[in-house]
Length: 95
Image 1 (spheres, rainbow, N blue to C red):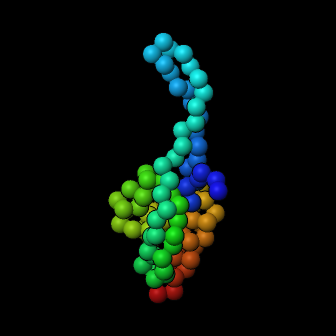
Image 2 (cartoon, rainbow, N blue to C red):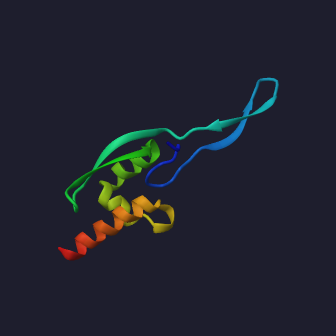
């Protein structure tokens, strides 16, 4: 399983570990991925996603999965998240 966020696609980054003697060695910065169940009010459905903690905080700040996805640009979302967003918008347009 890849180490990527299911909504934003945040992945592994690389950089240097710098010692006290200023020696630099390459290292990997892993995203803080959590498996969470998010409820969509428009679809009345629960989605089990593997997202990073920063994305989870943003979802809670925006008031839920539906409002977060509708306010986020499609260029920032993964294909899976775009599909969820499309079905949410279709359900809202239908109602």
